[in-house]
Image (cartoon, rainbow, N blue to C red; front, side, top):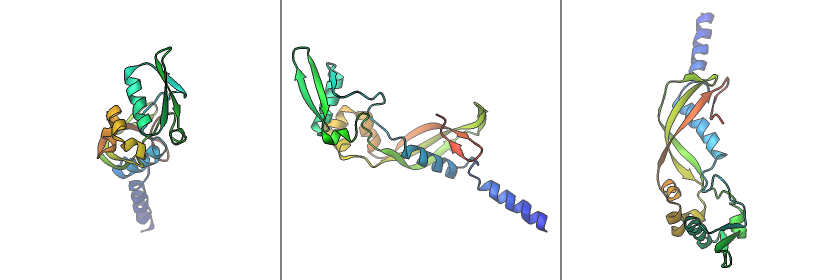
Length: 173
């Protein structure tokens, strides 16, 4: 009787393991990951003061000026605009992160297949952005950064690779 109970206990623990390919484990992994990997306007962070003559960059930076994150000075001698950070903008510079992915729901995932030495799965999920700063809601900023505007309004989706380790699932970096 004791052996049967032990086998049943092992089976139950195995089903609830953090290494099992379950939606619950994937949600926990993604919640932990995204809290330290926010969504940002700039992946390649500009250095400030920042100077540009590009019409696209000027439109984007001017939107951040309208949101009180930067100050613009025109340099007519070399035809560029120079942008410096305001005290409020310094809190978000240089990448200008506008929230992190939360309230995650798993849509689907592939069966784990060994790759790079670990079982990996492709997870498709929906999320909404959390802790969106006020400057990201300014209409000029949303027009200048349409991908950000779309992400902060309602639910968005994504796909990510997760790798199984000895103790849980992780996002390979």
